[in-house]
Amino acid sequence: MKTFNIPDFYRSRIITPIKEFRRKNDKLKRDYAPTLLDFGPVQFLIARHFGFCYGVENAIDIAYKAIHENPDRRIFLLSEMIHNPDVNRDLTDRGVRFMMDTKGNQLIPWEELTPEDIVIVPAFGTTVENQHKLAELGINSYVYDTTCPFVEKVWNRAAQIGEKDYTIIVHGKPNHEETRATFSHSKENAPTIVIKDLKQAIQLAKYITGEVPLSGFAIDFKGQFSEGFDPQKDLQRIGVVNQTTMLASDTQGIADYLKNVMIRHYALKPEQVEERFANTRDTLCYATNDNQDATYALLTHQADLVIVAGGYNSSNTSHLVELCEQKFPTYFIESVNKILDNQLIRHFDLAKKEEIVTENYLPQTAPARIMLTCGASCPDAVVEAILMRLLSFFEGTKPVEEVMQAF
Figure (cartoon, rainbow, N blue to C red):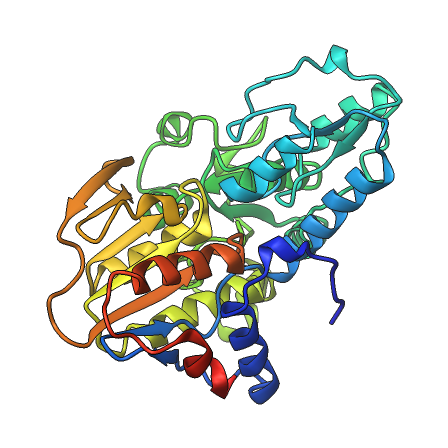
C-alpha cells in the first residue's frame, strides 16, 4: 500500500509503534483483540484499528504538499479538509483559508478567487457544481484534490449502476459534505434520493409498494431527491450506496430491507433479484469497517469507561461513540484539553448535541481499566496526549519505557 508523508507532530512515541507492531504481526487483519497497556494502578485497552485511515493520510500528504510547493500563493480549502479540529487548526495557522463551512455556507465569495490561487478539495470530495465554478474561474480543482479514493469508489459504482437504469439510493446524512458530494455526482447519471436511516427506508418502501399516496413523497423527502424525481417510475429499479463513514451494519440493514421489499413486491425468484435491485456491497469503506469491527471486539472486554477522541462533527467517530455508549460510560472529547483534572471532564453529548461537564468520571477501583479509541481523522499524537494525561492521575505507575518494551 502507498505510504504518505505525514508531519511528525501527528505521530506518537506510544500509539504509532503499537499500531505498526500489530500491523506487522497481523498482516491479514484477523486479530481484532485490543492491545493491553498495563501500568499497574491503571490499564489501557487500545482498539486494534483506529486513527488516520488511507484517505486521511492521502489528504494530509496532498494538503501539506500544496503548502510547501506554493509559499507565495494564496491557498484555500473548499471546506474543512477532514473533521478534526487539530488538523484544520494547523492548516489555518499556516495561512490556508476555508471557502465554506461544513454545511456548505459560503465564507469567502467565489469572486475573491483568481486563477493564481490554489484551491484544495477536501477528503469528502466536492459537488459537480463546485467543480464547474472553479473551472469557470480558471482554477484546476484536480491539482490538489484530496478526495478519498473510497469516496470516489462510491461515485464510480453509482455511475455504473445508474447507467444500467437503476435509481440510486444514498444512505447518509443529508447535510454531510460527503453525502452532498455523492448526491451531486450520482444525480448526473441517475435519479437519486438520500435516506438517513432505516426509518426513512421503511417510509420509502411504502412508495415502492404503493401503500401511501405519491402526493406525500415531496414532503417526506424534502431536499433529499434529484430534480424531476418520479417515485412511481424511479423506484422500480434501485441500488443502495452509502456515505462511507456510516455504520456498515446500518447500511447493510437498509440494503437488505429494501432488497426484500423488492423481492416481495415483484415476486422475484433468486435469479431475478438483480433485475430490480443492484448489488453494491463493494462500496463499504474498509477503514470504517475495520474501526467498527475493532470497536465491537473492544467492547467484549471489561472496562470502567471509554474515551473516544475525535472531532465532534466527525460522522465515523460519532458512530464509534454510539457503539461504546451501549455498554460503558463513554466520553467523547476533541483533545486532551477537555480532561480538566482528575475529577472533571468536558465531553460532547451526542443526544444533546452540546458539550457537558461530568464529575468523578474516573473509577475508584484498582486497577482502573480505561478503553481508548478514536475516529479515522484523529492523529496518534492526540490519543497519546490523552493517555499520558490520564496516566498522570494515578500514583505508582510503571514507566512508559518499561510498558512499551514489548513493542
